Structures are given as structure tokens and as C-alpha cells.
Length: 399
Image 1 (cartoon, helix red, strand yellow):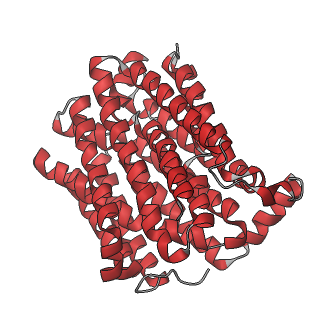
Image 2: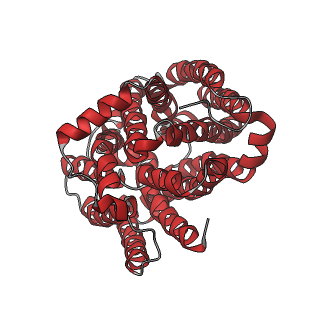
């Protein structure tokens, strides 16, 4: 990669950091939000589900928009919108307004990380893509850690609204830096996009149908939807489990969730070495095994220390499995990579929202341990399925 794409990767990484922080910032707030707005903890989870649903559905727009207008330009617009909606969220007077503003944040944030992945797919040769995606993952994992920790910290010290005010400022800074870099001509301009046919919904739907006719595309999308429901759906309730099951405070629960991100950072550091040793088969199977072990510890650990270890295991495992699927997504339809990758994100977060709704139903009934157990078994089975569909070393099976 040249210095210009490297700089753009750093700036996109900043936007991705903010996007992931905004996605996970509400996890340690659920108990506090339920008390402030007089709703149950399960009902308070609507702030997470609304974000995830909007994030997933809007991928259907951002994919073709990125292919048409240029991925970097769309990322800048999405980051700017996130700054506005985060400020509105901080001022939400009622729970209904809070849920709606969170949905708007999800709709805006949907244009950042998936298009960043697609941009990497356009700019980086396949043999370097796993490592480059791991670098982007450092930003997203760090954002997740910061969001979960700061969400809990702000809730106990400054109030939950302060967390969204800070996020608004960070999004604004990221948008300004990206805009200045693009305007200076340092980013690759989407010259070809200017000559592309005008966008039409009929053409987009026809292209999407053509993608869905590809067996590899259908397989990747189905797998990531299941992964989203099992892994991401349970992740949202880990802080609630730490608070209700082990008596931790909101800030302490958010701090424990940092270990999930630490596991992801550990993976990003050793991604190249582990890929060389285990191949994608080994990464998928090992990752699923670690997620399952982590969920079982969170469900049944007799002491909080074991649950903390489970959070770390789940973090390492999730990024082993998910990064393998991300690489598959960038290669499953190279001729329409923006649309394909955003479809991937759409199914991931629709799966997450389904998982959140199911687990939300269980949390108010004290069913988290058996639900976590079922998710662990499901993830383990998913890991076996994925490991059978990728090659033993390096390259992804044919798109």
C-alpha cells in the first residue's frame, strides 16, 4: 500500500473506532436506562436492537451508494450524520425519542465499517487482505472496548448522556479529517463511478438477485446471520449478566467487557502468525470453541473471576471466527464488492437484532444462563460448518 492509502486507512480507522464505540456504548447502560425511564431491562434493550436493525437494513442502501459515489465519500457523509444523531441522542427527553435517535445513529453508522472493508477489498491485494483487515479490526475492537467501558463509566460518574455528547465530538473530528484528506486529493477518487450508469432500484434489485443466485454468497450470508444472532446477540447482555449475576457495578461490568476487546486485539496482533499455523479452517474451529467456552463460563461460573476469563476467551474466539468470515465477504463477489460486503453487514446485524430480541425476552425471566448455553452449542456447531468450507491454509475457498 502507498502512503496515501495508508493514511486513509488510519482516518477510516478513526471513523470505525467511533462507529463501534457508538454501537456498544449502551451495553452497560441498560440497568440505568431501565430505572430512569421506568422500563424493564429487557425493554431497555430496544436501544440496542433499534441500532442493530437500522444498521442492518441501511446496508441495502449504502452498498450501491458506495459503488456509485465512491466509498470514501459515503463514509464521510455517514460519519458526519453520526455526529448529528449522537448529539440528538444525548438530549433525548423520553425513552421513545431515545430509541428513535439510536435507530438514526445505527442508520448513519451503517455506512462506515462495511464500506471500509469494501474499500480495503478494492485497494489491497488478496494475499495482504487478512492482515489489513486485522489492522482495521484494531480500530473497531478498540472502539468497542472504549464504548463499553466509557458507557459504564459515564453512567456512574457524569450520566449516560455525557457518553453520547463525547461521541458526537469524536464523530465530528473524524468527519472533518476525512473530508480534508479527500479534498486534498490524497484519497483515490472514484473516477470510474462518475461514468457508471445512473442508480435505479430496479437495477440494484436485479444485481442483488444475481448475487443471491451465487451459492457462495448465499452460504456466507446465512452463516454470518447465524453468527450475529448467537455471538453478537448474547454479547449485548454480558454486562447485565455481570451486574445481576455477579453483583458488579455498571462501570465494573463495562471494564470487564474491555477484556472482550483485549481478546480481539490479541488476535489482531497475532493474526498473520496464527493464519500461517492454523489456516482458516483452524481459525474458524478454534474461534468457535473459545466462544463456546467463554459463554459457558459466563453462564455457569461459580465466581466472577471465571466469568471474567470467559469474557476474554469469547473475545479471542469471536475475532478468530468473524475475521475469517469477513475475508470471505470481501472475496465472494469481487465484481460488486461494495454491495456484497454491505449485504454481509446487513445479515450480520439483522441476525444480531434477532438475537438481542430473543435474549431480551429471557433476561427479565432469569433465563440468561440456559440461553447462553444454547448459544455456546450453536456457535460450536457453526464453527464446524465454517471450517469445512474454507481451505486449510491462507486462501479462501473459491467465490
